[in-house]
Structure formats: C-alpha cells, structure tokens
Image (cartoon, rainbow, N blue to C red; front, side, top):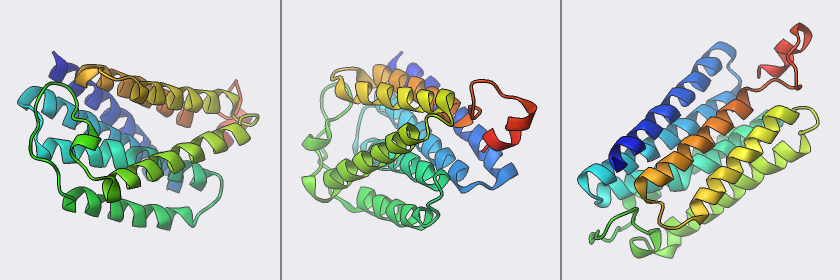
Length: 218
C-alpha cells in the first residue's frame, strides 16, 4: 500500500508538471519552464519513494530521492518565481545550480547500510558538506524566493499567490513531521504540488474576465 500511494502521488505530480510544460510550449514563458521542471522533479521524487517502499531502500533509490526531492524541487520553484518577477538572469543561475546538484548527487559517497522502514534520514548517509549544505541553501533560498514574490505581488494575484503560499505551507509541514513514511510523505507531496499548480495557473484577480484573461494566463 505504501508503494501504491507513493506511485499515485508521482502520477499526480507528473500530470500537473506535464500540464505546465504544455503551457510553456504554447507561450514560451521561461517561468513556466522552471515551474514545470520543478513539478516533474517532484514526480521523480515520489517515484523514488515508491521504489524505496516497494523494493527496499538502497543507494540508487536514495540518490534519486535526494536529488529530485532534496536538491531540485524548491530551488526550481524559486527560479520560476524570480523569472516571473522579471529577473531573467536567474535562468542562467538556475541551470548552473541544476548541473551542480546533479554532480553532487551522483558523486558524493552514500552510506550503503540501509536498514529499517521509512525514508532514510539524510544525516545517516550523507556528509554535511557538500550534499546536505547544498540542500539547505537551495531549499532555503528557493522557498524564500517563492514566498517573497508571492507576498509582494499578492494584491495583483490574491487567489493564485494565496494558493502558492498554502502549497509551501503544506510542504513545510510535511517536511517537519517525522515518521510519515513513504505513503504519508507522498500524500503531502501530492497535496502541496496540487496547490502550487493551482496557484501558478490561477488568474490575476478573483474573477477571470475576458479583458484580464491574456494578462493572467502567464
């Protein structure tokens, strides 16, 4: 059951990430590409949860989960928000960060002894530098960027930004809770990604009128 629920959450995240990717292909707005990449990373992290729950955790499942869930999701969300705010140079910084995160996740040593049930704690398998430090900085700065842009522009997009902040709150609450297991963590992931997707897709105002449609569908 743990694996089934985690896989279902992966499908939800994959579907929503694909929807944003479709919108990016139609509009070519760079923030949509960053948000789509973030939600697709979410999907792969949930897939790693399903892998760990079904076959048992090992270094491969743990590296996959840590890369996509611990290193990429929140920073890519932050890149998307900053791109939407008009900081186009952030796109290049985001690409450099993704390359660094992939290199770290592939190269750092991972403790091979995986025992017990549930998601393996990062502190038991990774040194603080560079992997855990990079995750702390990436998640902290990415979440701060999303929250700051949402708060500063909430009068323009009250519904969308409120949903984005709610999604961040759900994700943070899930990360703070210990012992959720793969299924519980995946359920939190699915709820958070749904709120984020709705926030990114919401119109600029509470009501979407024909005159505001072209402005709010970015």
